[in-house]
Image 1 (cartoon, rainbow, N blue to C red):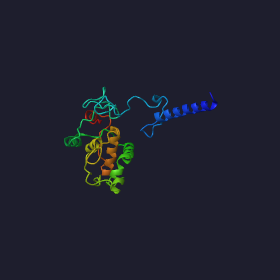
Image 2: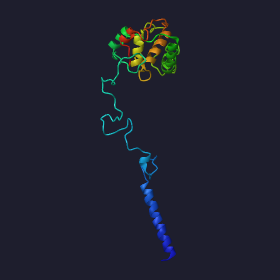
Image 3: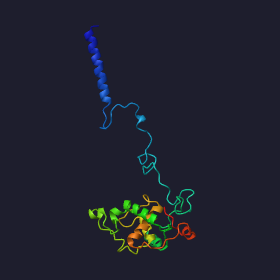
Image 4: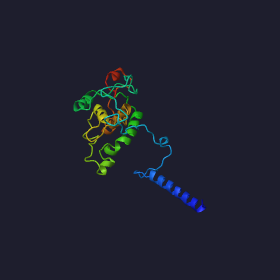
Length: 221
């Protein structure tokens, strides 16, 4: 066979192989590299958290707890324990009023707790309520809020600590719930600082480890 024929055959085979590779690497996904070597090494076949999957009706891999249940061993210890009883006040008008009448801060009022409450307030609250609690936060000033929140030393001056804590836990009006961002201790510290902004910094607080504090259903989520 002539060398020229061998070259033609080789070129033909190479062209066919190149065409096959080109066709096999055509993908609808513009981000796909086409031919992949061992794709399972970097693309997991398992379902990721919150990914769509055929196992659950709501397509959630990370399942929520059954309503009305609590973690095993979830019992009262003290206010600093993660194993406190669940927050006993419902997210209703009745629960709000009941919390205002019954709920007392179990933390001893100290300058340290007030300062820590201020730090948390400045992280989570100042953008709406303002640095001094006047309802003049940045999103209010920028027109991103339909109306300024009431001032703490004005219409909210008489708001009891139980209602403050309840509002931080569940949210109130346009304010969202903050229980997922602040644990129960930090919510009580923020409550202390809000009382400072109210001008009610001298309000009495129950001792942290007193029997009365343990019997009062103060624990949060």
